[in-house]
Structure formats: structure tokens, C-alpha cells
Length: 156
Image (cartoon, rainbow, N blue to C red; front, side):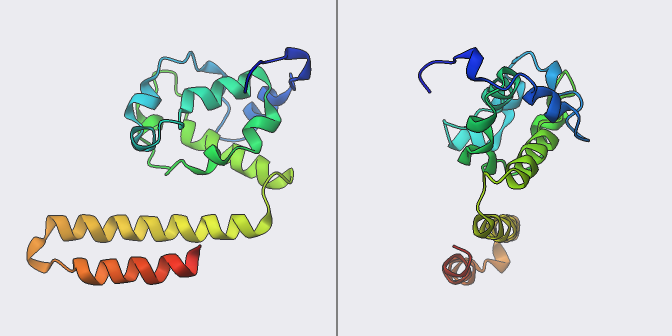
């Protein structure tokens, strides 16, 4: 993204988002950075910035937002949701944006199924790894690694 040309933006995009349940307060964001600072995804992916997604949406950058792969990076951990001083509920906003992207044809149907499978797989993997770390006496790392390899080939 080089320049923002306002006449090319969709001025109603922010209202479309805010009209959806869960995203009613997203226009309250004043980019304090609390969401990004607390986000586990932003910690490992420098391109992921909840503030940027909100700002782009507020500016009316509909196509850029709804076609962006970054929408699918959110792990929906609700950390941003819990910490936002403005009650923006970013996790719900992401869900609204994802649904809009699907409904408006920005996301191929096969990708949706893959993402849902991958989300489920990642959550299971996270739980297995945490269990192994909390209970090292029952460490089953080899089985987890084999499962990762097998399931990842099926998911993606």
C-alpha cells in the first residue's frame, strides 16, 4: 500500500461493520496499541497489527481489508478484547470482517474449509503441547510430533 486515495475508499464500510452484532463499538478505537501489545500473533508476526486493521476499516479500505490474508491470522484468544480500554471487542470485529469477506466473495470456498480445519488443529496442538509441558512425567512429544505431521498433511 503506497498511498491512500480517499475518493477510492468506501466511506460506508465502517458503518457496515458497526451495524453487525459484536462490532458496534469498533469506531471507538483511538489506536492506543493495547491490543497489538498484548496480541500473541503480533508477537510472532510483525505484519499482524489489530490497530492497522481497524484504521484501514475506518478509512474505508474495504477491498484491502476483506481480501487480506491477515484477517485469518487472529487466533481469537480474546486478549485484545479483554484489555481494550474502549471496549472495541476486536475479536468480534475480526469475526465480522471474516464473515463479510466470505459473503462478499473475497475468500474462495475451499480456503474457508481449510482455515476452519487448520484452526481446530492448531487449538488441539496447543492443548497437547501445554499438557506435555505441565505434566512432563506423561510427556508424549513423539506422538504429538507424529500427529502434527499426519494431520497437517491432511489439513493443508
